[in-house]
Image (cartoon, rainbow, N blue to C red; front, side):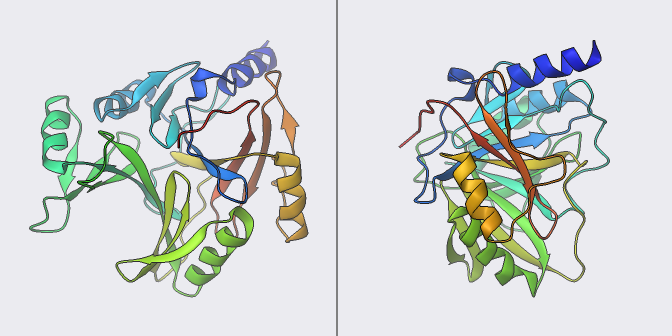
Amino acid sequence: MKKLISALWLISALGTGAAWAQPYTPNDAGVTNGHWHLNSRDVAANKHILLSMGGTAIGPGERVQFPGVQVILNQGPDAKPSTGGTVGTVVNHIGFTVPNVQEAVAKWKAAGVPFEPGAPGRLDQGWVTTTDGLKIEIQEDKNQKEPIRSKHVHFFLPEKSIPESQAWYGKVFGAKAGTLNNAPVADLPGVQLRFNKVAVAEGPTKGRVLDHIGFDVKDLKAFIAKAEAAGVKLDADGAYRTNDAGVGIAFITDPWGTRIELNERPKPQYLP
C-alpha cells in the first residue's frame, strides 16, 4: 500500500498541463529553468509565506508557481524531514525580484512574512527566511512587469571552483557566462546562476530544505547521452524513467554537491 501511495503521488506530482504552468523558452541547448524542490517540515507555513509573497497555488500536490519557476514544497509520503536550511549547503540561497522592495515588504509583513533588511542603507534588497530555513534574497528591478519573479540561485564555492562551476553549467546546460557587479554569473532562461567565494567547501543539497533544483529539457534521452559523453554521470537513484503521465525524469549531481532534477514534459507551453 505504501508503494502504491508513493507511485500515485509521483504520477500526480509530475503530471502535465496547466498544473506545471509555463517555464521560459528554452535556450539553444534545449534547457529552461523548471523548479525548486523543497523538503519541507512544515508545508503549510512555507506555503503561506510563498503565497503571501505573490506566488500562485497550483495542483496537484503542494506547489506554488512564480514566473520562471515552480516551487514544490514536499517530497512525497516517504520523504524524511529536512536536515537543515540552505545556509551551509552549496546553494546558500535562491532569489526573487520585485518592482519595488519596500512596497512588497509592506504587504508581506502584514501577512506575517518574516523579512530582514539587507545591507545598511539599502532599501532595494533584503531577505526572507522560511520556517524551514529556506533563505530567499529579494532584490528590486524597477523595469520588471511581474509583481514577483524568480531571479537567481546563489552557489557558495571555494574560489578555485567558481570558474570551474561556471564553465560546467555552460558545457552541460548551455548557460551563458557573464558578470554582475564584477562577479561571475551564468544565465539560463528563467534563472541566473551566481557564485560567491567561501573559504571551505559547503555541504551537498540532498536532504536539506532545498533538496534539489530542476531544469526542463526538450529531449531528455539525447541530453543524457550528451552529458554522459562529457563525463557527467546519473545519480545512483537517478536513472532515466518516465511516469504514467509521460514525463521523463532523471537526476544528476554537479561536482560541488548540487542535486539537479532533469525533466522532459510532453507538449510544454513556454513563456516568451
